Image 1 (cartoon, rainbow, N blue to C red):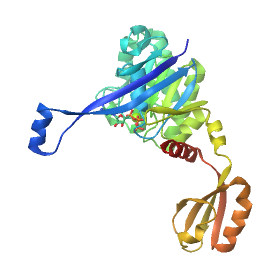
Image 2 (image 1 turned 90 degrees about the horizontal axis):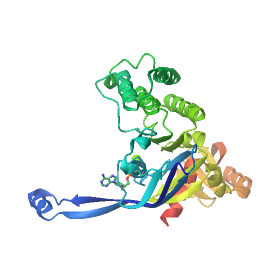
Image 3 (image 1 turned 45 degrees about the vertical axis):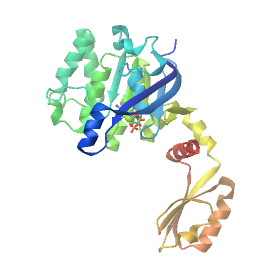
Image 4 (image 1 turned 60 degrees about the horizontal axis):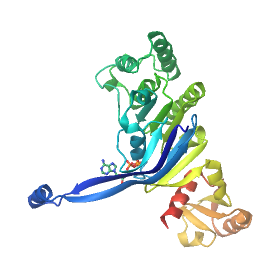
Length: 326
Ligand SMILES: Nc1ncnc2c1ncn2[C@@H]1O[C@H](COP(=O)(O)OP(=O)(O)OP(=O)(O)O)[C@@H](O)[C@H]1O
Ligand SMILES: [Mg+2]
């Protein structure tokens, strides 16, 4: 049995449009102008137990909507999905006890209570035996370095501390399925790293299935073997990041800084200009032509510094979207 499976999973939102002014308000009330937004358009997923999957896509691609359907918060308007063999919207306790959803931009802990109190509520809710709870929470608190923080009102914690507390709550009942929607959103690099390490460890311990969305490529690079990329509600790539990079590895980016400002026109004709700023430029060239192009650039332009980069994962994803937009 798959941990997560879906076929033709679809979600349309219907929103009412309102024209400006009082007349518009009356009209919207009497004869609403309904507009359909197709957020998710037929997604097929097959995820094995224990997989850690990076779920990528630009803003508005439908990632959060998909995770909400998989968690049973939203009803699909088409297709179906199963998590551990259950239909999530039926909200069977057998499934809910095994499932966790963490959203970086929305919190589940009680704002006015210390996180600890919320953990205790979660213990009751998920019927975690007292001894096990103690061991587990102690481990989680230690791993996330939260010892001094869990007895402070959540509202007084920093964003990073709050996120860590959210993760403790989400994992304290050892769910088999963990959906993480931008868990590192807005966190500094140290906290991001800490959370990544923690997730890697938690996965190694429990072998839970993790589906994670993030706009930080490093999260996905470090944690996920498999990546599913969606754009405009459909899957545009499913595989490893390496395989995706290989698709584009026939090119290199030459990065130049100049000792004085140059005209963009002077940097043209060598390859595809990724970025130009007057005193610096990034030019993409075919791998085999790199030495020649470099020689030409050095001869023509007042180069101060130079480096050659492989195509970054960010760039790979950008190109994938650009290809998809055609
Ligand atoms: N409650 C809603 N009502 C109407 N439209 C919605 C609603 N929620 C989301 N949408 C629309 O559905 C589309 C997909 O949104 P979703 O939040 O799933 O994207 P996302 O991939 O999570 O994006 P982001 O990376 O910005 O979080 C967007 O066009 C969004 O405007
Ligand atoms: Mg989202």
